[in-house]
Length: 188
Length: 316
Image (tube, rainbow over all chains, first blue to last red; front, top):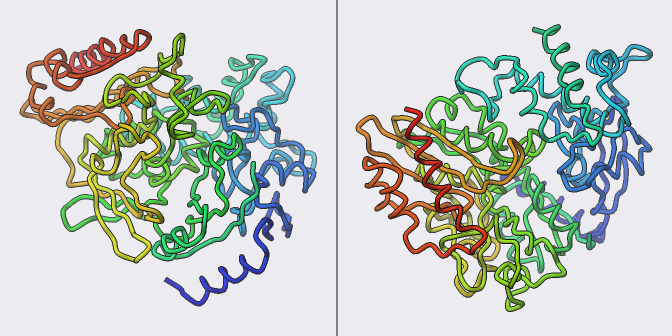
């Protein structure tokens, strides 16, 4: 649609010699300009380049959810996306959730309900859970939603289904469910 | 993962032209399947063309009373669109039965159609696979192979992999079309049935796309009135691929349409089988699964498909 800018981009790619690219994104409110090997996932860029190790690497194949972060307000698996594809994006990780000493409500609820044992999956659980509440509020249906056109009810089944992309090897699921339910009800 | 060069394009025709021109080029959109396969070195592109900025992000009404879904519309947004929830319930249901919330936020409409099989032997690079390495043989057909998840119909002596998409099964029952753009800039439109290929002797060829050709949209015809349902049977309650799934649209006069997932290399529907729907699940499946060649391990899918449809029909 816009030939001059497309041609410009193409030239840039050819000039850069191809196997690395520069990318700028905002992480937890701070802008970062980095040159990265094209293969770098967003997860590795966060952990290895920006040293934000709160986001965890579990399976590295999108199956466990430990790497869940928010990009432009939506939860995704940071392991299954290339960092170079996030130019201009606004990324929120677990490190960006607390304001100074004040934990965000989901973080506090996980502590209140003892919703973890080893804690490795917890950053991903919290990032995912926060997004789940927003998705429910926005009317996103799930596999267990009875009426596709009605507002979403906050039920155990809805929360469990929506959290199925986050595994917890310690099996803290019942307390994770309690923590999320508490925040959901506070908000409702 | 092997090294590759990367570029962003802003126009679909330009994307197609570049894909035809650069050796070893592949499109990337959501990347949730492609990156996984690149990590396993099953896909080894030399160049990635990022098509997320091609402006195909909208769902717009068509002159025929249907909807045109841009290829970059994400699975979560498509499932949640009020028009889809109201008029194309089977599609919304199929979408939310697939993957996880995180993946659906990334996965695109075009990419979902192009995802590769989850056959364990396709993923295991130590095993022969005709789809991954044409001519190598098919480990899934070997003695003692685990074929429980694999196909029962439309398969061949070279490959018994299934197509993993839930979305595509719903699109097949809705009679959706696929719009593409070629490297020349020419566009074309295919039915979903024309789009997907059966494996035959060339299981590596999965669809009708020509080199460089890019999916730009899925076109949904005007809504089909009636009951829309999608019943997915799997080994766990969520976030798993189908053993069998049934997409059903039952119109008020008792006629309807059925497509199956989890049983074939493409969404499986036969219009002549639909005609038997008023007679019940057994009669329909006799026609829909006629000619099936299951393995010993997955013959249960024949019964499961029939019972899954029977269960759906009994819910009325």
